[in-house]
Image 1 (cartoon, helix red, strand yellow):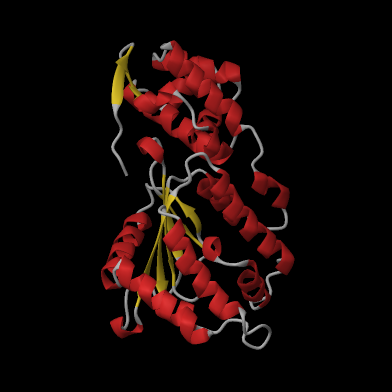
Image 2 (cartoon, one colour; image 1 turned 90 degrees about the vertical axis):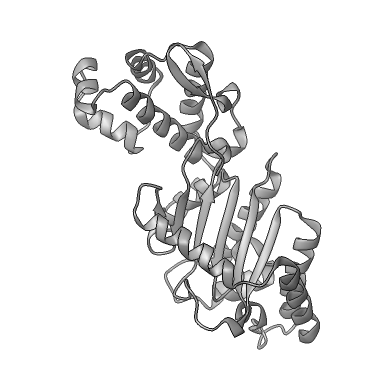
Length: 307
């Protein structure tokens, strides 16, 4: 992730990216950027949460909820915090007010509340605003690379958790479309196990699903320069990460630290000690993977074999 570049304003370092706000990032990322910025300004002012609460005549829990994202922040409260922290540069104040307004909006994933796991909905919010997505999948093709027929079959073979099959396919399609519509789509790097492209998913239903799926992978890599796929060959033997898929998300201009998502665990913030382990695991898997060109050749060859 690129380091932050700062400009000096009224005794406070202000991120260069504060000159504008990328509306593509969505409310979850805007909220996280706002919370991170407020936390940084408070620490730079050498103030404790207890002092802030006492000075503003708030309850200590209110400051904790604001910085922790458990509650939104009103315009008057935000202005009071910024004044206390010595942040008076007009452009920066307006940026943070814009972030607060955006954070109160509803993302496209909100319509699925009560129908999908809250931890997954939170991940969708982060994914929508990521600038670099790194994902490892051992058993299946990553959802953002799945064709609809493949996604439908995979959804139909999941252990029954009460999630509607058609809903899973719908959300997968919406995720793909959302990233494609962004003004600056994220870069994406996928690590796949060779068996995920060789497994003849759907052979008892529609034998044509494979090879269409690996052919779609090859076409995506060839036509979209923001996407790279690396395949871990079976000849590599055992390798780090075989026990489960995970994703690492980075964000533009270093305004938000990298987060990790793993199904069943949820989104892990950068401060979580487990994040380093996932970073190291991804790099270790990457070392075992074929080069990009060889991976594309293998994917193309598998598609031809399945035909």
